[in-house]
Length: 305
Image (tube, rainbow, N blue to C red; front, side):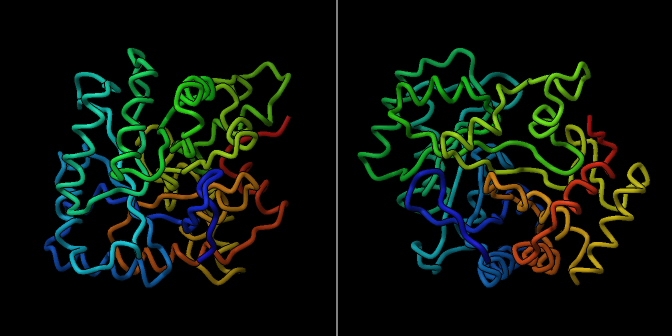
């Protein structure tokens, strides 16, 4: 499994991480443990959580299932900041209490990475900076990042947080790649050329911030997966052709497309199927050509100007 550094830190992370949102759907703690063990056997020792996944159940189940695994062999990331259905909250009090609750559920003294989940327009960046300093000083969080934020929101946070923001988790797939579309349609009067995120892809490359791609098989906002979907016949035909060429599965090609980008993007996959995880892990070994990358992009219905 290839590794990259998280932002400008010394922390090495695998280019594929396991998203743990769906583990409450597994039948037993033993099945969750088998998934964790399978993940680590593939070199995927990065586990992505959030306090709202399963209302906290994902963290609790993981903490129980991972008991006995040396803590320094796992990289655990969690998120906070969402009151589901009501509001976002980046207050110092909420951040600190959320982390304490996550640590208790995860049965650990610290998380490697904490992300702020969705932007809070009522955020006071000084409060966030104070919370981060406290968590770092107390040894509860090693590194910090955000999720679903644009370039100026990160710039504002980093101004007060001393450059602590090292990652931005964003939805990205072949069929959902606005952050790429806008950069390819510069000076073109079409919808694809509309910059909605402050050129976040280029910003993260300039600032050495790791983009973490979530929902790598989805199109739209949770509209469904594009793999095997009749809405994407040309894309699936080409993916199958490349899967045959590289002797991997279709889902590995979909992830390899993300990993091919020179921005050094880390991909978070949310499967709970052990064989599927093994298949996806092979994406780390696939290096698509420039022509193949662009062919997949256009097969998804995109057009180059």
